Amino acid sequence: MAALIPVSPPYRLDRTLSCGQAFRWQWQDGTATGVFAGRQVRLKQEQHRIRVEGLQKPEQLTALQHYLAVDEPLRTIEETLRRDRILRRILPHTTGIALMRQDPWECLVSFVISAFNNIPKIELTLEKLCHRYGGPFPSPQTLAGARLRELRSCLLGYRAPYLLEMAKRIAAGGFELSELADVPYAEARKLLLTLPGVGHKVADCVLLFAYGKGEAFPVDVWVKRAVERWYFSGRPATEKRIRDAARARFGPLAGYAQQHLYYYIRNAVTWQRGNTVTRRKA
DNA sequence: GGGCAGGTGTAAT
DNA sequence: ATTACACCTGCC
Image 1: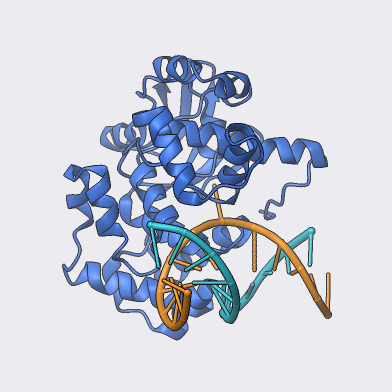
Image 2: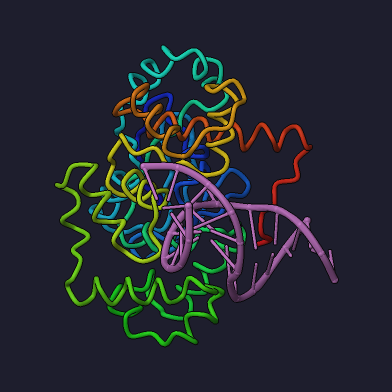
């Protein structure tokens, strides 16, 4: 049984799902496959709507709409971003990206794993975690009861203790993820930084991709390169300087600016080198 | 086979 | 506040 989600331009499902904010959607033949609400789901955009296969209940569809952020005012957002002369040049290649509203716990785990790692292995690790601990995604309680050795067998490497300690703290009620939603960006960031394995970059990813805090500007190696090249005349700049500059320039749309810069520089490199992006085989 | 890959923790300045 | 260095492990 298929359902339809209406979308308005310039929303683009392909760019939204493959701009680095979510790791668990596989894309092939114009269709995205992934897990949502505990079910295998297939998504395909047909002009002004998204065809959804795999969901039964109306409330699951509503939740999916929320997750995909199809209601984001992208037209207005991109219009504002185009006032920046760099983004004005980039946007034709990146238009349609929406910041999703992911589950905070899943997002947190995903990006702790992402540190000093590569994308195929991050995806593989998440798959192994879900497979070994069952469910659509292992809860804090489940991971809190896991054995360190067992976690390591999911390719977590040195990150396994971080995940275990984080899960224990959250499961024991020592850190309430849901409460961060109402906490302002700066304070929520400080709180996230107290978790093991969470540094500036991961904290900003979670604040942006799960809590919708638009001031967040995650600086990874790619965004660093992009900002140095296009905003600092090719001069090296510290991570903090880059973040401060971004917040000053883009304010609450810093996160959107980051997504467009990231998506563009990653793909530009790919285009130059001739389609050598490493994607894990299905 | 050696180096690389979406940073973070730790120690020292 | 800023900087240097080690780090699991699969993959190219």
